[in-house]
Image 1 (cartoon, helix red, strand yellow):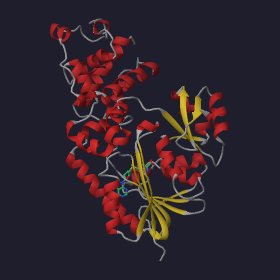
Image 2: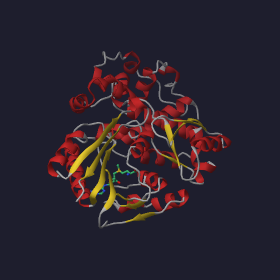
Image 3: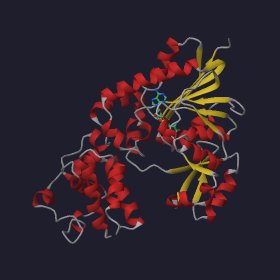
Image 4: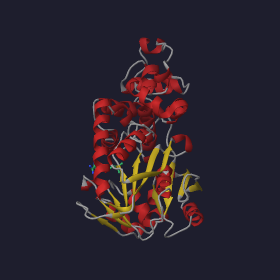
Length: 385
Ligand SMILES: C[S@@+](CC[C@H](N)C(=O)[O-])C[C@H]1O[C@@H](n2cnc3c(N)ncnc32)[C@H](O)[C@@H]1O
């Protein structure tokens, strides 16, 4: 496909997204109907689509319309490219610019438009991020790095780097966690590489790994991963020697976990109704996802005040349930991939009022300025009986 044809395909996919279809579904459906597109085309189109989702507001401003065509036009203008080189009207390319499009001069961009922040969310983000607001919002407009977690139960970081190199993948240690590698070359080859297939490395954000590395020693400890989802953190805990029980309100979310655990050589019990008390309960709660909007940018635009209020309630209830599963003198770890105080520090302050038997031992807020996603950890200790 020509570069212009890729932009046209991205515009069509974005139109479908704007009419309400999830981004991944739009991409999959397009790929299924476009067998002529090679893997490089599909990857390039995915990048154009995801860049436009991260920067939807500013691109719509520059392109003059919140449509697929407006967004790709805005994308070209934002990178200083000449749109007439792509909007040629030739076969498979976008049709030539209309006189209105060609002469359109965008008004000066308000700050929140330039930073691709929804207006309603700006006060909460400002309260939460203070002087980091603009740099963090700017970071959310960029692609996220690709990180791997090295399964230290089976291989060292150095050997993992050497084995990845044999499969043409470049990776370097990352400061955020002792298990973390940042992939600097050929990330698309990871899932076919030997170290990945052999369970020596897993895809996992570095901040997500950092959160695990902040927990107390879990070797031989019983751990309940109360919101296990796909099991990224459950696997990381099992690699550290924990006896992990994984639970999720939606057990279907855990369907890949047995295979992932088998690949990693880990044992993880799944439980639809966990019983009893554990040395550590991890609650990696559902949240706004504001820390991971580089990877899942649609969430930035779909979040509403009402949805955020619902999340606050769910987080509160999960903490109250997790409290019942934490043994005296045990640990409760509350984690979000959010940077909003209302989901993090405030949620924990309210919990401590309801649950005076806990004390806050450690709190950490990470943002993309440290390299990984935005994550929050509160580590609470239950009083001995
Ligand atoms: C942030 S995701 C978990 C990600 C996962 N821990 C990982 O590292 O890959 C949050 C999970 O919480 C689950 N969840 C939502 N409400 C819940 C509840 N009330 N109790 C338990 N799990 C819940 C969701 O189904 C979702 O899988």
